Amino acid sequence: MSGLEKVFTPIEVKGIKIPNRIVFPPTDTNFGSADGFVTKMDLDYYEKISRGGSGLVIVGASAVTKNGRGFPNVLNVYDDRYINGLKKLFAVIKRNDAIPGLQLSHAGRQAWMPNFEPVAPSPLPCILKSASQGLVMEMTKPRELTLGEIEEIEDAFAAAAVRVKEAGAEFIEFHGCHGYLIHEFLSSFSNKRADDYGGNLENRARFAVNLIMKTRDSLGERFPLCFRMSADGRVEGDLNLEESKRLAQMLVDAGIDILHVSSGRFENIDYISPTKNLGECVNVHLAKGIKECIDVPVITVGAIYDIITAEKILCEEKADMVAIGRAQIADPELVNKSKRGDFDSIKKCIRCNECGLSLYTEPGMHCVINIDLPKITPDTPRVKV
Image (cartoon, rainbow, N blue to C red; front, side, top):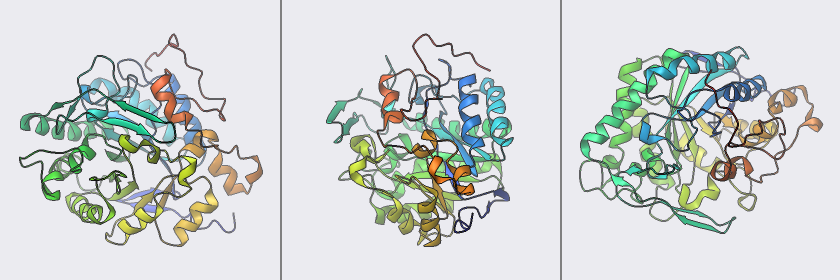
């Protein structure tokens, strides 16, 4: 469509040609089986999302170790037995002409699992807070990781990346934001260690840098690696933009090809899926700040709901790609409809955040606008494909 030329211009990263600049970001759905296998619900969900027109579709946070699971039904990538299901999932995305990616994750102290001992850089419990919901809740106190365990998790990220590549993904993202384990190490807010993994920024970044370098060694130079970061933790003592600019260069030097710039953590969870009172385009200034100091593409995300806004961001060179999540959950055809100029038929996200909040109260994600999402009850079968 005329006026949306930048959005629909391809971008190439490490030889992978992404057909347009819109990203469907990693979203937790809880559609997997109890033991972390891909299910038909996963296939159906990503079929509709990838058919909708995004150039890059990133499968949501998938656990690189058993104790790294964030929710009871997230996908696992810590064992070879998960490869076959992932092959089917990536094949679904590819046949709709989108580039399939996956986010590697370890939930750290923010693991939302029953009867479970979380682990973290320091034995500090997460205090989940939402000003919009009036919510304050202390999560389970984690056990502090030993040096040997830290190295094992670094290796687990690299091993999981090899499985994901074997399954057919063409893009890997590291979950380095929102208070998950990598972010926990990066931030002095949650990292109080006195060894080589704590203290100054270089030490706090050691875990992230090591797992990136190990993954790069395992996959080779031509495979695209992305890092999703909270460039502002949105709580006192966490990363801010100036420190994140230094961190961004460290990550690129370690082997990162794209930076995906978000903000927030569970202690200020409203910024993870920005609530209405925070306005729109919440993190664009952060993406712009990071883009100014590195020479790799930058993705911006956070309360961006239409393709016209995405085009403006790109034309003003504040980012190189734009991630739109909740608006595509509400209407998976958002990108295609926009390309045709069919704006009136787009089902608009109302920013109720039920797609995120339902993960804490329901068996799986739901959306009050998109009634085609599966209706999940505790008795819904979750058979691996």
